[in-house]
Length: 407
Image (tube, helix red, strand yellow):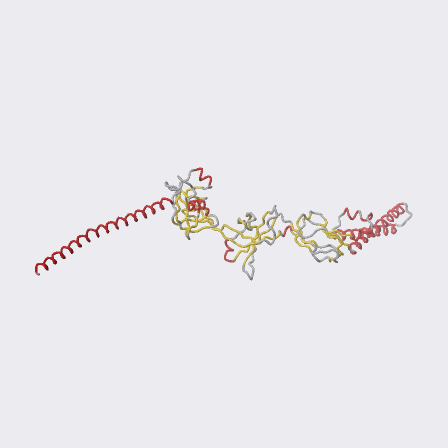
């Protein structure tokens, strides 16, 4: 019995030893296998990461750069214009604006021009029937006839006086009557001139039919566009009311609102870029006048700019933005804003390296509408893509440059 116990104890111990050895051996192999798999996975990730890093560089041939419109420049220092943007409004040039008022009251017989029509200088805008004009014409004709009669009488008295038939007193009375008749005729003629009748028209009055005596023509003082019309057929138009407002829009004014804080930065002779929207090209002008007194309510002053308007695109009432350069600052690196590419909330530029073009995050400083200062990310002397960065970014995202271009 004791021998059997000893035998079974020995077998159990041997089994335990074998199990321990087997666990140690196979467990070590499993750990080794796991390590190999882990290392292999890490190598694959490393390879993928390395592939991603390399894929950020894009090589392009000269033909490709030309096709995609990519321009490369060298970063360097420059001067950055400090600009001021102010609101403004297009208005008609007051020096080429006319309020057409009838010189005599009358009833509108015919309306020749309407709102928006173009009228040439001297062209008839409307025709009125005016009793006052008829009376003035009749007064002139009567005065003219008296001059004619007084002249004939003076001539006769002059002849009789020289022949000693008539007295000197009769001759002087005849001369006085002639002079008075001439004065009356001149006065009547001047009144007709105030009604805009020309010398040629006045000279033709004796031969005109009676129906033409009441005819009054309103004419354009210069060529322009009818921007306001306050006249209607059959209306009794008085001589203190605007019938038309005509404007020569070949030039216009820009009234720029200058705020109190900016008044010292704006001066006469300063160049201004006027923007009226995407559909109208920018126009460059010069400040010709600044009002010396600021408005009491808004505390703003008006600066006036005269602009050419050959195509009529700048229409009165149009709101515009005026950009003025008020200062210049020097910066170590300045690039055009066309070089900037936005990606995930950060700003990048594409730099040119031996491997190709790579996106590089940059930090910007001062800027205006066209240029920006680079504080970090781009150094003077580095070559960068000044134009076509968005194309590079889009094509790189799609991998559309083809084999041999992206690596």
